Image (cartoon, rainbow, N blue to C red; front, side):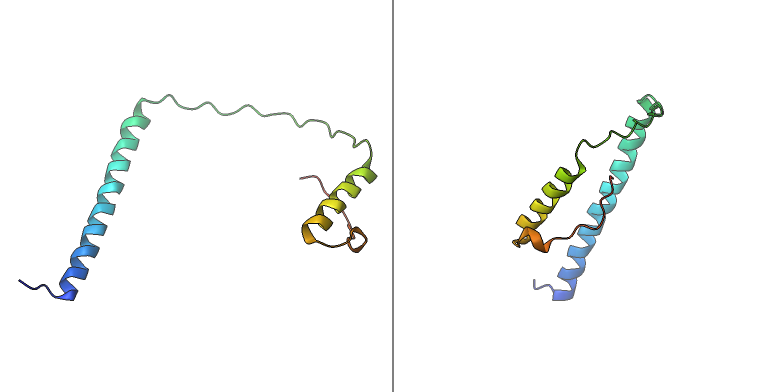
Amino acid sequence: MEYSNLFVCLMGMGTVFFGLICLIVLTTVMGKIVGGHAAPAAAPAAIPAAPAAAEPNRQELVAAVSAAIAEELGTDITGIRIVSMKKL
């Protein structure tokens, strides 16, 4: 018996979507089972902001960053101009 291309395509797509729906249902059920027995997580305590540590030598930091950028770009360090640096 010869099946048409459309039938084979629709059966394949139907099988995939059926499998995905089964996965969604199973993960939802497992989440409710496992989530129901787990203790509620305590809210993390607020961490006080640490005082900003003074950088001992900002010129050395700028030189190191400039050298790293120049090395990555494959250029001379004199071609790098850092306008500002902000701590993230």
